[in-house]
Length: 484
Ligand code: AMP
Ligand code: MG
Image 1: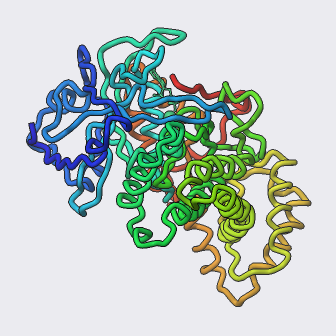
Image 2: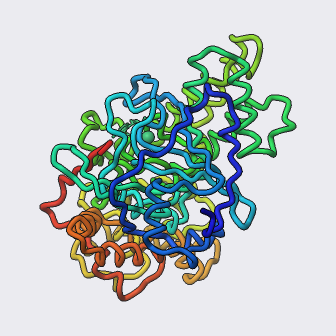
């Protein structure tokens, strides 16, 4: 059935059986469309005008396979909280790669679509709440201008999934530049077959980084590119207070997209140690640890590439280590520039770092909301909060005002820089929970309203007001759950 303009061209399917298992989605009892992302569909060149909602439910549940699809589960491994495990798509099926009207290639993946050879003891299914959560947050990230996988549709399966309670089953259609992960490389490396590793490197470069095709040392250049794009990504997360929550190597994408929205959440009160995930006992993936975990994951990626960096193992390790050691310097430089932007600062002043750190320390000590503090700096009429009458804050603000005047920039110019990087709205945890709870009870309007609000995060709009307050104090110990 190709009434909706699927345009599949499945390159990963063409790789050998080492890389994947051929498997169809397991049909579901009573699929019912919950959300459909028409904007994304149109960007992809899909057309839903000739199909009924019933047909869409059949398509996005995997009950009727799209023309040209070649369903597979991808093999991968991963360090989960530091421990190495062989994994693979245990509850997701890659339907194929759709070529968009702009000739871009996107993986179309169904998440929650039944068991696969990689399911281990899992049921291969997903619950409605977490799939809607991924939809909300991934789309919010997209509109925050942060590289991410996207969400095209959510369908209820009409079946129950058993977790701690009985929950409604659902399937999310995820759209990604690819689902290649650091863990894909780890899986192949663990097999100790250099030809397979070379195949994966070639595949990756062809698909994502054709500009390094002619390089003298492709593996080394791939490592360098990945370091750069992952730094850009994590700096963006830090910018908006996003906490991924489960930065295992299988959840780090080779394309540099944010992937796998499990226990992620946005920080409200500024505290670098913030962690929401119920299973992250030791704060491995806490807000301030994200850059060093990115570096740790990149070191695992570098280890995979060693055999191709230089035939002399010692030399290869030395080269790769040097690249990884450059991470901190590169990260610091990009982070401080990002913070300068958040404060509307042009040029560089040796005192910038202290100015920035002093603000963060003040926020931490005074339990100030991270997002709203920048909103207040951009507009003092923002929301009355006596915290900003605090004398230490006023002294800091004076220093900041002095610094703003440097480089002869107009206030408008400084403020327009700030407005381009400081969101007015983020997916506040209590708002997300409220929307999910209603959706679970068949009321989709709070969810749809929230999604709409999150499409314009940088605009100062009247309707934002109800979405800008941090969670009530009772919500401070907010917890998120993984693998649900
Ligand atoms: P995640 O925490 O979503 O990144 O998943 C980690 C690994 O567990 C991946 O290999 C998933 O495919 C697998 N997994 C998670 N939930 C399930 C499930 N319900 N059934 C089978 N496999 C699962
Ligand atoms: Mg994952």
